[in-house]
Length: 136
Image (cartoon, rainbow, N blue to C red):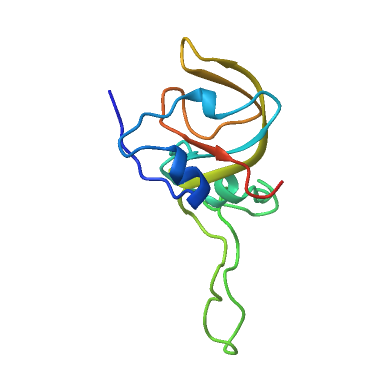
């Protein structure tokens, strides 16, 4: 299945590329650094222990029905609200992730494969965007 995506390039690169030209892995060089952009694995609605690595309260000394809760979420009458960014339960994963400065260890042009050392976001088979590293 083919996918189409637009990419911003410099004026120098635009002179050497024609409209509609297909780009392959020969654009990258072995040893160069790349950024990989993809969508992380979706884990659905997750609690604070899984999502934010909170510690679970002790299951003793009178604890009941609150074994995996996050505890208190606010203060008192002042400020009388929950601050923005409070770590709570919610959607975990399925977000756009950029992994920066991964090294290209190999290129196989006949199979159009690029071998990258490091972690690539998303499950097997998910589409990723590979570009030259921005922060080298």
